[in-house]
Amino acid sequence: MSNDKQNQRRNPCLFASTEALRSFAESVSSLWCPSSIEILTQLPSAKDFISQFVAKSRPCILRLDRNLPRWGVENIQEMCGKDSIITVNVTPDGHGDAIRRVQEDDNKIQKMFVLPEERSMSIGKFVQSLRNNPESHNLRMDSQFHMLELDILEMDENNNGGQLQDKVATENKSSNGIFYYSLQNDCLRKELPPLVPYVDKNFQEILLWAETVFGTGPPDAVNLWVGPSRAVSSTHKDYYENLFFVSSGEKIFYLHPPCDAPFLPLKEIQTCRFQQQGDHTWNVVREENIDNPNIPFKTPWIDLWGTDKYDSYRHPITVSVRAGDILYLPSLWFHQVSQTCETVAINWWFDMQFDSPLYCYFDLLQNCRVECQDDEEK
Image (cartoon, rainbow, N blue to C red; front, top):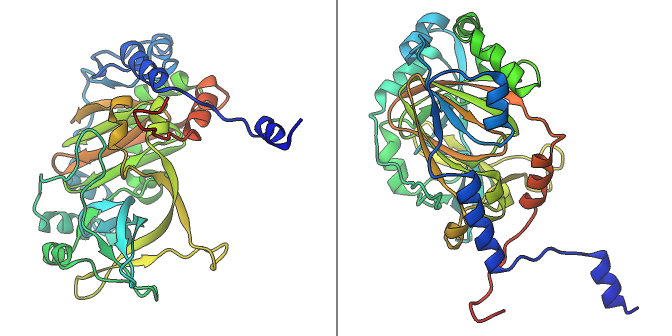
């Protein structure tokens, strides 16, 4: 047997024709993922919810006829105290945790994953910062997950940071940035413990129901989200079953099912972070790789640049989650999130069950790569 044939056997690869991919996309649309999701006005039995939604990895909205809290940011401040310290994400334009184009000293432009600046501040100062920034509904995004048309950032090679282009720095100099409480990682219980008894009391029945539904015990994390319309979360997925409650305002979720993974490429992206100076200009600074300072720190993230050609194979769903709604977002679903106005929300992350066919299939799809051929090629 020749070495070439031996190598082919040692390194198998998968191939799917254009016709097969189109058939797959059509099956997903007709059998699994309609263009809208179901709204439930009554809490179903755990058994019914498992069979109709969890087992099928199908999102839905619980719009229940019950007195769930409608807290605004002032209510949060009153319950926790204006002097309580929290960790707030701050960016010049509302787009943190996102892939951005960064121009280095040699004028070379490359894509980097840019983290928000994290600031410790009192709740009172956070509320004041929200009030000082006028709401803007000019969100530069669309429901098809095309890459955001954001300004190019600048960085110097000495890692001292680089000013953003004048347009961004000027637009945000007076507002001092966009403030978004989006720490995650169980932030409600860790940073805002006075809220815990209120949350547990108001959601006791739903949370006990959820523990039965997901079968993995109490929530692994409880998170609070408070931000203006200009704050946007870029496309990502979570390894959690997610119950997302909007207390006040409105969230817009742009969803994609897990089967769209090959058309939402995951890449290792060099990472940097926003940093604001005393004169209100913004710098971009490389994140240090603690394990190996000689190797750039990288973050795996969805890279949407140049993926418009995959639109016909993807299955976007736009979902409006208004005050009082609870969105069930199954694990592994891709989502990009914004809000139409100042919004307060709470979500619960329940561990997903990894010992399932869904995760195994997803893991394979996520590692598949799509290569386009010319129309003339067979």
